[in-house]
Each structure stands twice: as structure tokens, then as C-alpha cells.
Length: 420
Image (cartoon, rainbow, N blue to C red; front, side, top):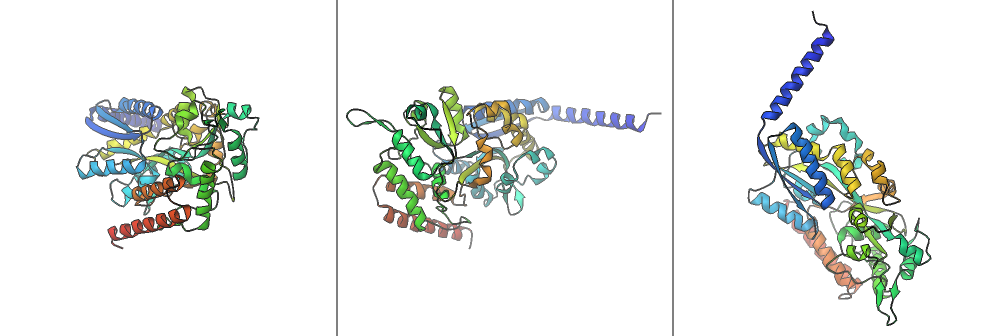
């Protein structure tokens, strides 16, 4: 007579065999929309390979959006797919889009799947907090980015400057001046800093001054706060008074930074991939403080489309995409900072940049990027007016008033759309 332990082992073995057989028999086609660069695509393909070990007859077609034109354009692309009844099964997206998608009920809740996978306790709780809407979780977090000052260590040494640490706005300004070079004719050959041209990149300048473009619950403009104009004036002066930065243009200056033509830029961990490729002697520093040292955090997550024909398979694919192995690979290749803290403590992740541990150390002082349901409109309004102010096309005094008016008009339109 078999012992109880033996019976349990036999039952477990039969269950596993049945599960494997069931997985082998499943045939389906899934479509995945991811985002990012080469690091993310490589990690995603390897995650799909692991998924196919369990589901060999499930084909996963993957496409990846580099988010070249910001999250507003990504929102437009995704909404057009749903409107055309041609949505993918799984979407990788970012906090900037969460509320826009949630109010349209495009994705299914994942709470049951999360509860069945205790390994998700390895994620920072704040990431799941911002992935939830009306008590339900629609996104499983992946990598995140907080904006840091990325700087060229070789150029700091050449200018006789100590590496930055716990610095202020004014200390940053003086460093940017010393890092700016001119030729005999007075033409700038090396900029000290790139004043950002994107919404996410510029937010820490407002946060460190104790203000923000929107109010605390992202329901109205905060542009008339005098600290907003003060922050904009500081950035304007870097360009037009100190002449340490060009006017923000359409393109970012990542390539110029990698080539040593810009000493400092405001970016997240995603820049590590190109820095490694360029063999750049780069490190990161906290954002300069004025009234605090807060920075901004944005993060990605995977969601399952409500229209998917294979929601359970899609959830399993999300499980592979958010596994520890995938998180470690993305982080070490140079994607976002892994949502799993264990994956951000590996020797490979901490090897570069030298101060890589700073990413997680600053997370308690990071505020989520403002992500209202009308984010697509808000981002365009802010950036259009911000660039106009930085370009001297409109005064800062008039620019903040115009931005305030346009933002509040957008929120009124949103309220009408939501039947409020």
C-alpha cells in the first residue's frame, strides 16, 4: 500500500504531466506590442522563447515602438488599433497612458493573476499602486526610469570640477558654465547642459522647486504658481544669459552627449545602452535641489486587451515578460531600472554607471509623472508653449497664462467627455 506521501507525489506528477500535455496541445497566435530599444527587444524575444518552452504551439508576433515622438503619439496609435478592431493581445505601455486607457476600459483586470504569483512581492509597492484604477490592477509593472543628471566624467575632470553630489541649482549653473567651451571666434563647441525638450525630462526642475505644471490630483493647471515661472526663468537663463545650452529643438542631444559635445543631460536609465556602446565615461548624479531633491519617475507595465481571444494565454505571456530573468536581462542590457528590486542588485546591473545604486536610492524621493486621462493633450499643450518660451517667441509671463488657459480648457473638455 502506497504511503500518503507517495500518493501525493504521484498525484503531483500526474498533474504536471497533464498540465504539460495541455500546454503542448494549445495552439494560438498572440500579438504583442512592446516599447523601447534594442535592449528591450532582446529581452522580450528571450522571454517569448521561455514562454514557448511551455507553449510551443503558440506563435507570438512582436512589434516594438521606440516612443520617438512621446507617449501622446503612442496613445493615438493604440486607440486607432482598438477603433479598427485590430488590437494586439498584450500591450507594453507607460504610466503616462494608464488613465487614458483605463477610463476607456481597454484592458482586463489582472488581480487574480497577480494573487496567484507571489513573486510579484519583489516589486516596489508604489509601482502597483500607480498601476491600479478604481480598486483594480490593470498593468503589471516592468522597468521604470527616474530622471537623473547624466554627466561625462572625463569632461568634469578636464574642467577641474569634482563629480557632483548633493548640489543646488546655483552649483549646477556654475558647473554648466565651466563645462561650456567656445572657439576663438566665440562659437560654442561644447555645451555644459542640454535644457530638455521633452515633458518627462523637464519635470524635476519643477519638482525640486516645490511646484508642478498640474495640481496635485492632475485635474487642473498649476501654471500660475509663481514657482512655475521662476523655474522656467532659470531654464531660460541657462540658454539666453549663460549660453550653456542650445534652445530646445525637435531632436534630443543624446548623440552629442555620447560624442562629448554636451557635458550633462537629464535622462533615465535607458541611456545606459548607448553609453556602453559609445564607451562613454558616464555617471549619474541626483538632480540639483532648490527646496527639495525630488525627481520624477515613470514606469512601464504590461496589460491584456479586453478584446483578446486568448486572455489566459496572454496573461501567461505577461508572466514571462515580467519574470526575474527578463527583468535582469533588460536592466543589465540598459533598459529601464528593473521593477524587481532583486534584479537591480545584480553585479551586472550595478557595474555601470559607477553610481548605479543611486537609481533605487532616489526612488523614495521620486514623484510620478503627471498622467491625467487627457495626457495626450496636456503634453502637447505644455511642450508647445514651453518651447515657445524657451525660444523667446513669447515671454514667460504671457506663456504661463496661455498654457494655463489651454490646459484648463482641455480639462473642461475631458469633464464633458466623462459626463461630469
